[in-house]
Image (cartoon, rainbow, N blue to C red; front, side, top):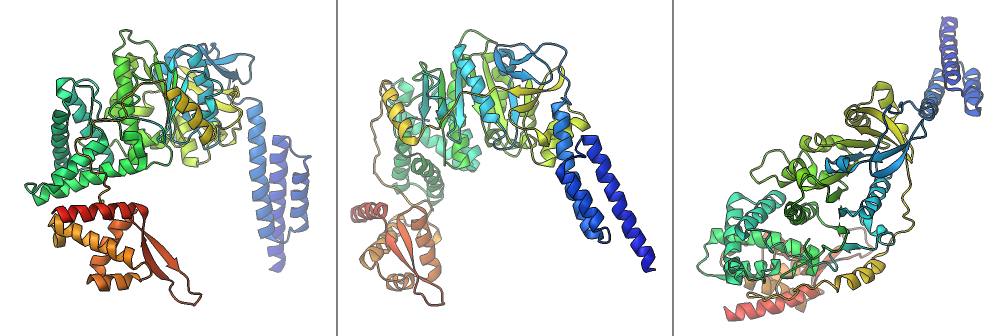
Length: 571
């Protein structure tokens, strides 16, 4: 019986040996050292099926990779019979001496770039940008990763707008002010999940603010978002405002305050750097790093609305005038963001209808399958770089027209190779040119360069503020135990004053002095902490027990406490 088991083991080892040898000959790797070592390992440990199996599995994986590379070098993708002509040179068609191009028409009808991080998508996009600018076509990059600033040494007429030195007023209307307010309300509702009744109330207050600033009388001074926040604070203080409306107002204040906190002074202006102000620059990059996804999405939509209006105002139709670049496209074009909802889906309208206005899009992402159908169905050209996920490889491969054998080798694509699919032509492989970018522009270099360029653009950065209070209000709405606003402010004042006067006391001691329950005290502490009015410090005693905690008032909290003293005294 033992002899039979040994015979089976040796037969299994022999089968594995022959399998590796056959695969190695097929790939032309039979004389490689790793093959010889694998065969020797199987021969030496033929009595141990586990070692034999592990050796065979590891060797076949490497053989498959080497075989794939050999096939790619032999050009598994046949060169197209017709020449790929156009105005933008992107590389060389693998397996031939011909060059590959993109036409302005391709760009006007949108193109898609798919590939994992570092696969070459940005190199491809910057290569296109340089040639578009040389051809006199404007480019707008919506940059979430600070990559397109590196084009500054190569494009003289480039401007990079960063929240540190950008000025933009979303309340400066495009076209009819009433329609613009509706658009602002729709986008806020979609990106910040506002309830319909809250959106309706916010639109009503924005309408009143427009009236107070004379926007409907064609005055050129517009309210800023800071004005909007301050105006809502005055309405919250109004004794005639009902408790339910106050809760909605605080929801709006929380939304607006989150943007003011994230974007700093960027939104505190009457007239910002709109498309009209930036008309002299051929390349504009809107940097939005380190912002929450809802703020990035909302800000991009507002910018696009300005751009679309400029394109529509041009009398020349169906002529490529501007190209927008969208890296991390799922930020705007995800199928999850565009399924249902009552707000206007402006992005869908832009992708499906803006072609006639001369707007084209370069849509780039790592996950094509996550994008909405209206996006991937409106692409005239797709370029596939290296992908790692089996799901994405299969989905993207089928989408660009690859067969089963071609799909199998997408995972082995290396820079500078990619697979290109143009409408009406089978997919083919291209060797992409390298863009001339050589170094990264630092934040300090960017700020110095851009401030000197932006200083030449006249804008009104100091609007008339009718409601200024210079206050950052807590983000949470007072609940049932403190509906009276004055009482709520007194509670906050006493809490901050106690922390300031007794910085060494523990949290429990503060609650005891203020006669607050743990639940109520923790709720107030969380509100103040979320708004950066207090800081928490952990004290390690060195003993094996939970470390002690104490809370300190921040500089922001000191300023807010002074405002609270004045507010309570006035009440």
